[in-house]
Image (cartoon, rainbow, N blue to C red; front, side, top):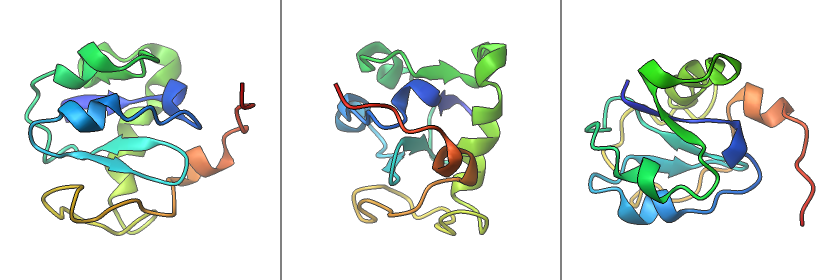
Amino acid sequence: MAYVITSPCIDVKDGACVQCCPVDCIYEGGRTLYIHPEECINCGVCVSVCPTEAIFHDEELPQSEAMFAAVNREFFGPQASALGSPGGACDVGKVACDHPVVAAWTVRPMN
């Protein structure tokens, strides 16, 4: 895996990272965004535009956010979206579900 979207994105989904991703590997779930670990080319452009500072390289994840490496990876598997590796988010569109960890996350109040 290269980059990982973590908890500050939950219930925010700013989307600046989606707009700048050169390989379209950032997918939208119900409450957060997810980076496909096999489609990410490790360029880091998404990190520079994320206003919530929710994106980290997998080797630099804060300990409190370490579980999100598995959350991003497992989102594409049968326990969540079952998307597999579709090869780009724009053809998929928004997915209504989330990884179970994100679905159970306390709802962030709207400002």
